[in-house]
Length: 278
Picture 1 (cartoon, rainbow, N blue to C red):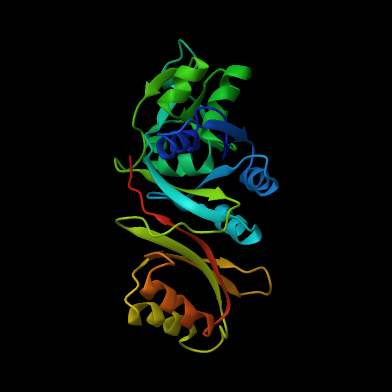
Picture 2: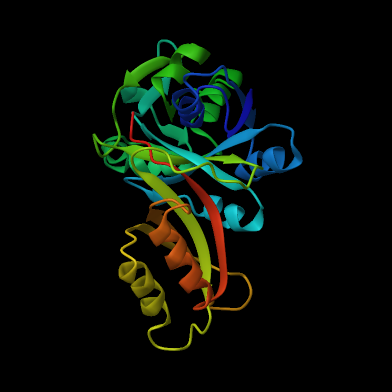
């Protein structure tokens, strides 16, 4: 089973794949961009893709939400991974000599406090593991990468510092994507449903309030809400909601039916069993 992810071998997205598909054989297939991951799943090149959606320190991965709306894929699962960042250098390098640090913008944001202790320039690149791989491909004096300890072992780099993230509970949430838009029956325990909606009249006071009130009326718990520009006109937004419950539940089904009458657009992006951080 092939599963697409953004980045290079050793990326935290690859760890998410191993965590989610632990009971089945899964081959992680690297792609350079998140858009490439969506395209691979949409085209049928791979049956699944894994994308990051939020980090507990640095916040939302906005591109992931924009691509979820742009493509017709189904969220079939989620996984949360504790992210422990390391400062990686070439063999023999000392931390005192580091003057440039390369990594993904999210990783740099998650390690902001540590980076302030270094007299070094933070340089954003497309991937954490990719920054480690590039350091080996193109050795650079005084340069280091922020990536996982697994990436250090994979690319033969030295760990100059461990657990450099600002928060010891640093965690990234991932969605698992597939082309099949048919939710399974509610699983035992907690389930989640993700929807995207556009307000019927976003100039009318209380439009969002009445949508959220519909969820409260049917006692459907709202776990997360994100807003993104719709791209249709200035200051017009899409709202992404993660709900506690399954589309097969009576309360959730009733709430969604009522929301359809209060919104200009309502789309269910997925309904799946909840998982917890590992």
